[in-house]
Length: 423
Image (cartoon, rainbow, N blue to C red; front, side, top):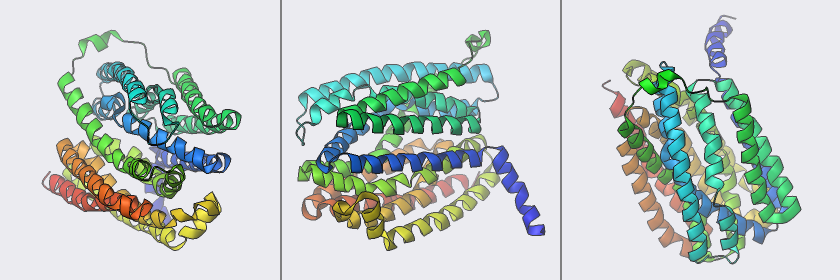
């Protein structure tokens, strides 16, 4: 009983601060998203699914720089100024306005690329043109969710992410049933527009206050955090996209793209767990960024929990890969099993070591360190992909990703610890 009573305090605090709401919502969201992907894999013929995956992968590469880092900058700066509400709102409105401008320019770039760039797979260019406004509608929702996080309104944040995920699942599947891949794209647009409408209705931004005009903030600091974070996040997420790109470019096979996409599905879907953990922990580490004792103590606790929990997921993936792929996606995708196992190792290194350290380096304003590590990872990934994909096909792409993640997955925690060691 005494042990149980000691546990109540930490668990009660986690409940009050919204940890279980965020993690529960994240679990539901990833479960629904994964189920949606599974339904689409069964619903759409393999060749068409490969074409869709190739196009969406290219759009995702453009979207790496969505809003020129507005989401990351606003999360960091709004959390820092949460005690001064007029200043926080002035920063948020500034970032939201310029994020929209950036995404209008991004839409033009996607259209130009769709018109002039030769597609590795026939039929990819018209679908790519349909996606030109996709980053903008995603950003509109993303920034409103950042506003909720900046206010530590984790319950509302969790609820609204669930609404968005359910809308995306229902409308995507419905669109695919009606009109195949074009219908799927239309359904995704409709889902984000509806989600933004719900966010604006349930959680509208406060009307501008006179005090906001009196608050000044460093626009130079905003753009520094935004652009460097955009570069870091973009490069980091690019690692997950390059494999599909190189498989499509070198193998020029829609079925190979489909199989590699299936191989990535579960390892990348499992990334929701460290992402939700960072969603909860990041604002607290940002708020306590000058408290060395608190930072070191909680970072060690978090790392130990990540190694144990994600290590168990890795062991299960290695042991039961064929059963998982065969049951979930069908026997036509069993050729994805070797790549799946390799990517599970990459997931473990990313989730347990790299992601927490790189996120918390941002709280210490060590943005350029992340830039250097991520750029080096990209360079290594490209070199390995060029060397390995033509020879080893899908497995070559998987090894390129895992090796590039593993190298700096070991460097980032050391660098973060050295940063906070003398605080």
